[in-house]
Amino acid sequence: MQITINRNMKRILAFLLAATMLLVLAACGNNGEPSNTVGPEKSDASAENGTQTTENKILVVYYSASGNTGRVAGFVADELNADTFEIVPAQPYSDADLNWTDRNSRVCREHDDPSLQDIALVSAEAPNWSDYDVVLFGYPIWWREAAWVVNSFVKNNDFTGKTVIPFCTSTSSGLGDSGTNLEKMARTGNWLEGQRFNENPSEDSVRGWARGLDLE
Ligand SMILES: Cc1cc2nc3c(=O)[nH]c(=O)nc-3n(C[C@H](O)[C@H](O)[C@H](O)COP(=O)(O)O)c2cc1C
Image (cartoon, rainbow, N blue to C red; front, top):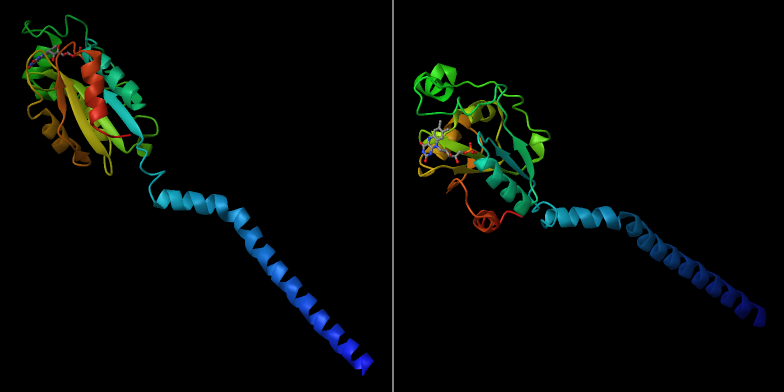
């Protein structure tokens, strides 16, 4: 009798031990596996809930013949932690070229003959273009339109999936149709209403505008 009880007890104990070990192993297995996947799982989750994807990658593309738009572009890029790409004509415009009061100047000849407005650029390809979600696009106003120097960049790049925000500098003209005309030329991208600045706007006003776009 004594022996039988001991054997039964041993069997029960052995069973309980085995069951406990199984439970412990199972628990370790559950704890251990996620500890390898917590990182990726967390980052997947954060990507899904937007904590990674809401951080827009921003590029400020600009052309500036005499520095005004370039100065504005610099403030915008700095305010938004954005990268910059300057559109540079292969043959830069001299002061004489820009003299719109001289009927024989380069700008006047190009203005009068649109076939001359296809301006060769040093490069029409911004590095890592496909990485950017938002493009701020800056230019001077020439004859109430965007300076045609930017046209080949606009035509040669695919803006699909990008939000594009034009900005310009001018003596007195507004943005006018310059932004919507560039949008038509691009045929891709979500072009928003842009902003006109005077030739020498205060740094605060430019930064304030950029901040107000709420892009970051
Ligand atoms: C060829 C040419 C045409 C211009 N046409 C206009 C115009 O139609 N309206 C205006 O307000 N300013 C006009 N401007 C002035 C420029 O838009 C202004 O000086 C601008 O800030 C220049 O920018 P940038 O220094 O970046 O080249 C013209 C300037 C040039 C050189």
